[in-house]
Length: 64
Image 1 (cartoon, rainbow, N blue to C red):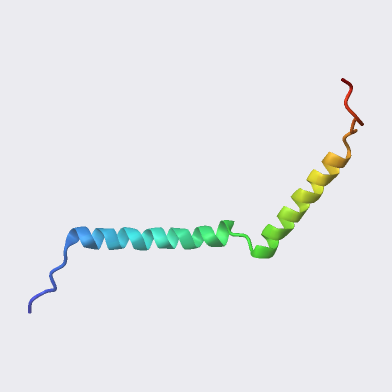
Image 2 (cartoon, rainbow, N blue to C red):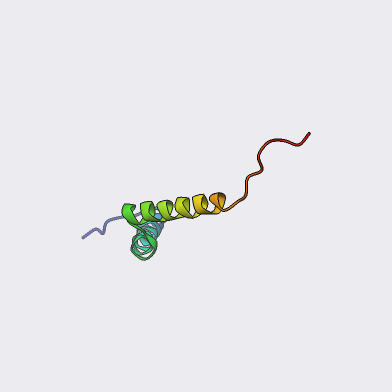
């Protein structure tokens, strides 16, 4: 009837890792975006940047 001897430091570290992994999983569900969502955001930002740059008046030639 001998109980299994465990190292409390190792047990606490293992428990902390487990808790962090659970939190990370929740964050992935809550804040994660799919690849297509990221690509859509990138495309929209590039389109807005092009429209902004095209709206500027370009000066032709240098006046020196």
